[in-house]
Length: 247
Image (cartoon, rainbow, N blue to C red; front, side, top):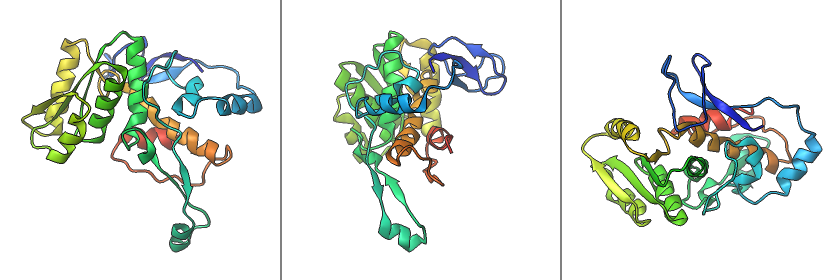
């Protein structure tokens, strides 16, 4: 399913697959729309997936990137069976997806992998984000591994431990006098002025597509079966929406 356009969730208006994130008509969020194709043979699709790399790029047929270019391997993290916890909760079967096995120990490596790969296709050479923690680590690490500059914008009062965890990757940290909303507002303004890929702003339609790889992996690791229920944190709206859509 090749990506076809960016589509407004509010009005359905379509836009080219560029670095943009909001509809010019109704100011709705944009998401990647894929071209309709005949359903592939399930057996052949399964074989192609299983022959792919042990990373999220094994699902490249369903991602908005033509030529994956990432220096760090993200995805294909363990799915662990938790029998004792299931018994305590009164459940027949319980599995836990351990995304702490990603390069910077969170699912943010998934979304950053997709956003950076697409940004490289669009010709960007500087990457940035507004963050208070995990996203900052992922952007800084993936940009450094690929040999590109990055900027991380944070609230000035962010905990020292979080700042240090990001700084070790050599990124440029910009402390903003304000809360996260203020930081995000500044980055939104900068995205219109600078030729930078802000992964959670002008690259957000592609960034959010990374979350669905968690659902793909879970289904594959369960023998290509859908789980009965999915419980996931809602700290990231894209994780909740994308990773549970298959259910």
